[in-house]
Image (cartoon, rainbow, N blue to C red; front, side, top):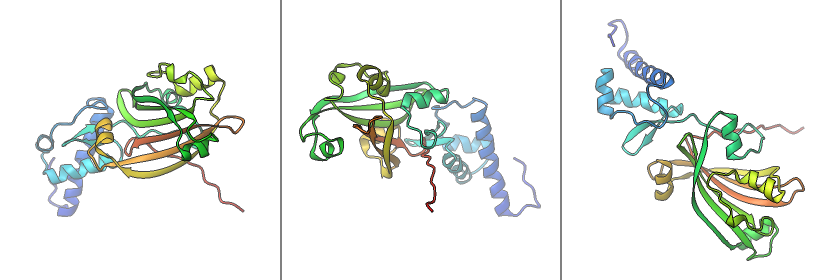
Length: 248
């Protein structure tokens, strides 16, 4: 990149990192660096663009804030665009992926039948100790890890659910088609938490990096409580949207 003698040194630094950012962004958009691919080491990238590592890191940090790249271990990868449900719409993960032309996937991390805790029983309108089915899955979009979800459903509402293969199926589709329960409305709380070692490993992060924890309480068309779900998203791969209205 040719230097301009009439430009102030601080402005020249800004031109350098903006040039690097724009070049990397263009390579990603053209598909030369596909989602999930690892970028060359910082030293190699700095030499490639003819800039210092400080300048390169500033460009990478800006791309990370925009969601184009993300830290992975000691290096960087090309990130998938941040995703999120449309405002005020309850969708399954599979429905959300299909609406964006993406391929959903996942792996079951844990599944078991267990008694409901006192808190779970109170929220779900059950007797303490009533049987629950708990399912934990790692969810992927186009083979890129996005979130870990942990769902709890009363087995009194879905007997035999614990015996079904839920590796690839949409849980909401199973609840509606097999058990006649249509998830219709949900209460959601959102908070930021740091990644522990296990979650960081599953989501391709370093421990301590930010995660978005969404706690969801779902009901069907009759107002019956049918599900409790904790969804833990990578902070750089999920965008929460809501519509707020000011009261009179």
